[in-house]
Image (cartoon, rainbow, N blue to C red; front, side, top):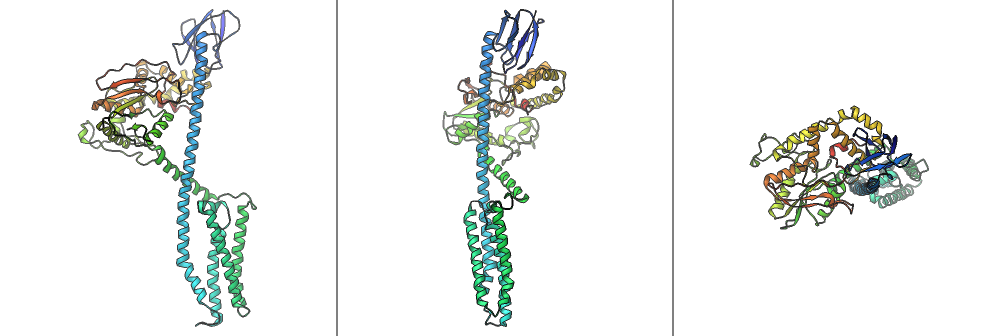
Length: 538
């Protein structure tokens, strides 16, 4: 007699069929199996299983009819939901804070540009317009070397030039509109008031000139008043544009390009000031110093950097992200290190086996920080993935590069795997129904299941190699191997202590040296996923 098992959990489960093979049941999917006693286990925690002695007809639900498994499954769903909600809120908060910082930095750069522009205008006024004003005052239509009519014509011509220049500036920056706000920054209000006052003074000066010329030289008014009238129309048009009388006040294409460029420059400045981190070692004997950190825990990393900058935590770790100074820079290997590499090679070769686009400048900064910490008598700490303390190390520093290349080669088969019948079968069975929401370790249920399927598809030797590599990030493996090579003692720490979940497990080992043999049992937590697999999540 067959029974139907319905997975109403958010996590995948596995049911054992009559041949003893485990069949995956994804969320909202069902599976028909014969027999009275049905065995079910959690896909992410295989040790959690239960047997249901079917005593009722109908559908068996994973969340209700399998005892401890049902309880643990619902607990895992709640934990995953809380973790993803926390991570989503953290990322949203981090994004908003970064955008606010970029906006402030863009405003600062904009104000700097505005000050430069206003200073240039003042220089032009002093050098170019002031002599014309002095000449206008000196000229009198009733006397001088020139004939009166010639003097009046020259004065009117100079007034036209002066009036035209001032009308452009007043008409362009006097009204309140998007363009003037962009050009003048935080000084827009004061600058607009100054330009408008200048415009009023120009009109007053033209009125005085008209009165001085009187009836004898009335024709000069026909020379400069049309220019003033055009300037007044230009000012009125821009005022109406700013008030929306001629449609929505928007920046033109050039203005939008300027805004994007300013934001890009501001973003680079913010990265260099906030995201970029060159470590901060507190030279104090016996003080713990973070010597290696798994970068995939973004929230915990932010907390570490924040506390380190506040002087609360000593950290030797370095992060030079894309878009910041020194990213992509390479440093040569000193001959004194005695490494068997090309003398012209950079540190990328022993670290990764080949030059990398992000460079190895971070490594030389890290070496400097570690040496400073060791000389000061600090207690080095190495943080491992949650539940994997002491695991994931390479055989030696000399093997760090070749092992990295091998991992990249294996992960290069992901594209082939996604075209395999196994992947297509998993997709048809409901793989895409798993959540893609990230938690603190940057993994999702979808990425973790994809990683399990990928390992099952790989040859046994390659799968075991990848599983043995879990516990440290790619760059971390070289860092820890270097500490072992130098014989520096360090404390093995589980990164869970930095996670936001108050119930997260924390594991701290005794001081570890190159000759110690650490064997840490795997904790019962969801399967960890290396950074390489996360790229499959959109």
